[in-house]
Length: 58
Image (cartoon, rainbow, N blue to C red; front, top):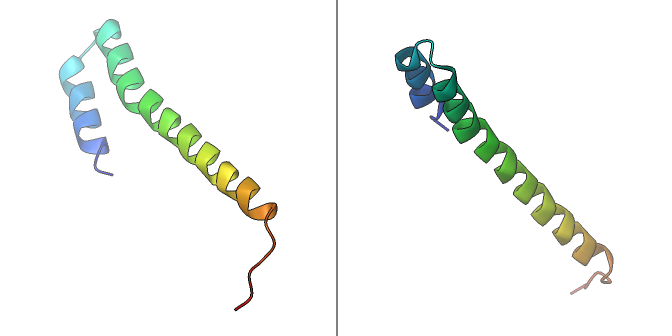
């Protein structure tokens, strides 16, 4: 995850523009939060599926 590099550089070049700051923050942080929610949902759905099935012993 090298997203810190463009993130910091965008902050440097943005200067005092608050609208640009909002775009930068939502563009980087909201997408990471959405990805975390999707991963948590997938992990929980896998746990739910595996808890209902008996273990197969070979």
